[in-house]
Image (tube, rainbow, N blue to C red; front, side, top):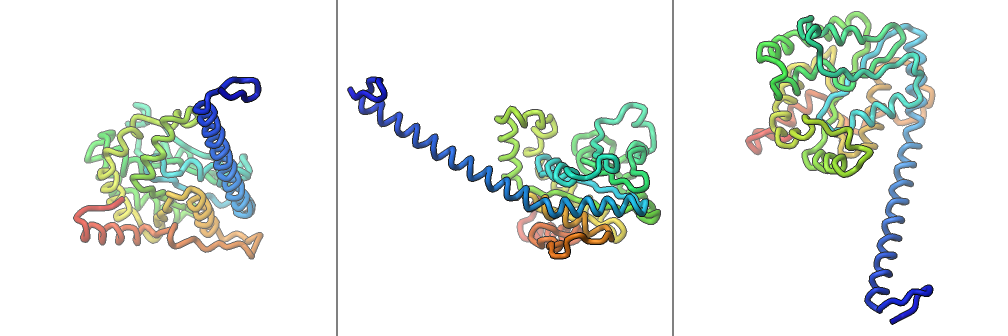
Length: 295
């Protein structure tokens, strides 16, 4: 037996205690390194967040309206990006809208009516955490709309958006694209992290097994609703920080405000930011090579 701090231990117990302490120290260093990296990333977003404040001021002074749509698969990083975009903006002139299931009364209304009710007034920014494009992807997959309702939406949405833009609204459509493996990793984290478990829904739990269905609907949506007046911008979002940074660049570039920091890099990373048309071409090429789409 060996005495350590007044406690009798066998050599085997001492070795086990040493290994445990060593592992704890390594985990602590790893957590500290991760926290430092996260802090550096958050700090590097601040110049862009300052530009977003200037952008918002321009909208207020000119009375222009702005709508930003955040679409994409579950766990693709939409919510985290929205929080970073709005973190320092004037709360009086921006709103985040995340509508739940429509009521029976809303189901009998014109489809776009409940979204129009949330549209910005002059000088305001409205960010939709999922939008009317639920009808293009989620609803047909899970049977929440009829084939006729889906077809009517796909025929009418481009005209609806054309009128919106023609009347002066700045419309930015972002689609966050995450890989299947990364989505699975994020879902697993949600299951085990008590601070993230609230994010899991019934739809989330089926997202992996319905992956190909979502991919097919994504393709149809991008192909039919990417237009010159309301184009889609696809954000590769496996790297959350890169996705947030480049989404901010896309948003800032959509508004003709006076730049505050001219030395800041406003050019989106072409490996992260893809036009909707290019994404469609890429998906079609992959289908020719492998016989099926890759999301």
